[in-house]
Image (cartoon, rainbow, N blue to C red; front, side, top):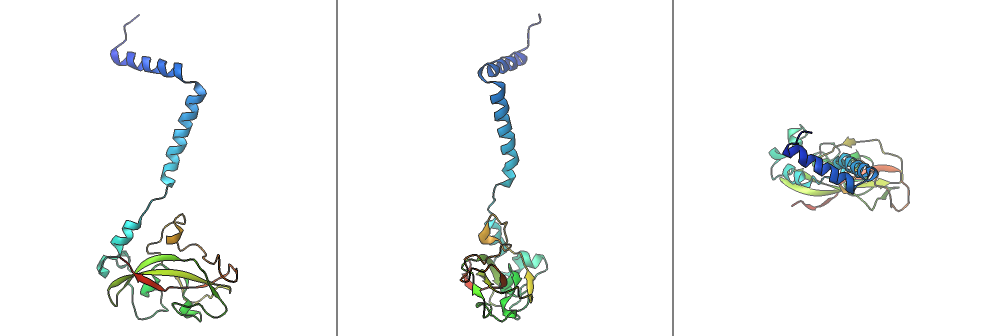
Length: 188
């Protein structure tokens, strides 16, 4: 019989020691757990708030919106490119009988909201906007906007505009009507 080289002997010794200390089922179970865990790793949530701070620098030239061709304006609040609507997904209440900060008659304000930081070109400041849905009537159907600046996936609901936020409204009616966009304060 030939004498084994150092590397081959070390691998054989390690393999025999492992085989003596573990059973096949335990080994296969651990290997399966590792493989499943590795495939689930990309599904873990990632915090992208750092990108929001970069996107909302002090001047409009640094905005991601400006690079995408969407430049905010501060003249027409019923337009989708109005600065407060940078992350709105729905109908603007200002077109539906309400205002930017109040729901139309016959609807009730949802107690929950999603938030975004929007740049105002008028005073060159960035503000925190708390989008809130008005609920209780059929969808308004006017001034429908889909802006996604700063939106994150549904597993980060406070930054997701894809959720109907009517849960918890006064009349417990989950029917969406329109969205208001009040300013909460300056973004830091």
